[in-house]
Length: 371
Ligand code: PRF
Ligand code: ZN
Image (cartoon, rainbow, N blue to C red; front, side, top):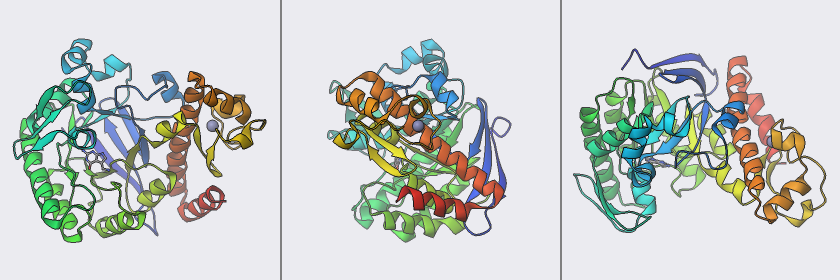
């Protein structure tokens, strides 16, 4: 594994847990902190891979659960893997499916063996085990595979959280044994819900399985922001320097910044693309609902400080018109802007860490974003 993957720690911030790093994978290098756009179905909705490259995406996330159900593993295998199927030649991370089975299915049964569920598409019955999750991800050929985990719900009892984290560890061990491709890396996932002792125990027992990096799951699942930050504060002093840390499923600008300050290197979120399609933009001055009537004759750019194609060529009035008429171009332009906004934020965080001016960058960002 080691010859294909390498994580290098480049710089540590003096005042916080933030750091600059670099992950080498078979499909290229990822500079961290890094935002991963989400392409659940093998596409970042409405964006061409060439556009994604232009705006600086270094890696995309895709989902085992969705691709397994549709189009099915054999078709992606016939295409020569997910990189070829979707024409994305940079790194891909695939989530393992466990979390998606839980969030998308009412009909499911979890046991120590794995999870039985009914497809959200046609109701057909399926079973995914840790071995199967690895097998599918090996066919997909992602650079980073995620271990099959159980993310207990926010509000779960300590017993439920304990069972889920122990099961996650047992499944991790099975994932590692099932894995046999040296050009793919498996990331274990820390669980433990909001219970401090379980979090630390999960972290401690998971780390021996982290070869190059590991993930933190089970956060941003409905808990208050302060609770999530409390858990990140709790874990931050216990991470080894030489392993990449990926916080799963977070991605508002403030969550990204607060996580980076607490030692997180990589994060993903559907938010920028999801809200774009309903006409909400992330801008340097905060969220802007371009759908609102106040923008109907606003001839200024969406975000005057952004140099993306949408902001340099179109007015708020035009973007509002497109969104209000459900025109495809509206989604395309707003998604492009929103995804670039978070890619730029990550790039600015990297520069600020490099230049030793993270604190002033963060306070300036917040002053403007919250104004
Ligand atoms: N586990 C997995 N994927 C995830 C999560 C998790 O806990 C989360 C939680 N925020 C998002 N995506 N496998
Ligand atoms: Zn823009």
